[in-house]
Length: 185
Image 1: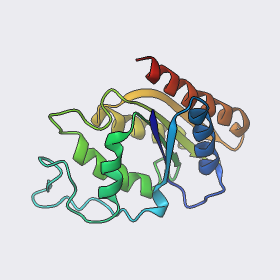
Image 2: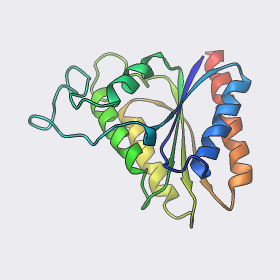
Image 3: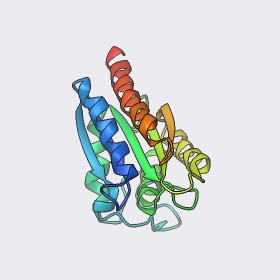
Image 4: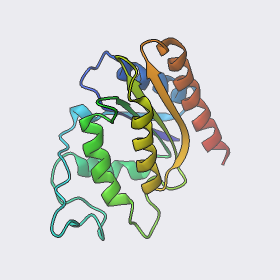
């Protein structure tokens, strides 16, 4: 069982990183192999809406903008489950998460064959470190992305500094349960 955990914060010791570590510990308790990716440490630019708005992403399901996206995208084919964790900025995913998911959506959403996410469970986590505002709109944006790529929605978790202690336990347990349920299929 292979699980990819994607985080997207420049702060490697903050709330988003703690959420990623909790998910990793939960998945690893089941024997899953975990691949951790911090999108802020990848060179992934914005979608260029190539050509007439669709480049090679529409029919070939590959982005023609050359950067770290290609290797990361290709590696997702071998994954059985995903955890997507983002800090909440202005009620949205972080810029690195938005850039990545925008390009991923274009490459995956219109596939006639199975997407890399189809029938695979995904946990999304919105980590609002300050006021906690924006969690709901961020999770809604993440849900829309999962709908487009035909992912199985496993859980949507909002975390703040106020509820951090028990939400980290929730993330740990959710990742563990996601892997166990996936193994049972």
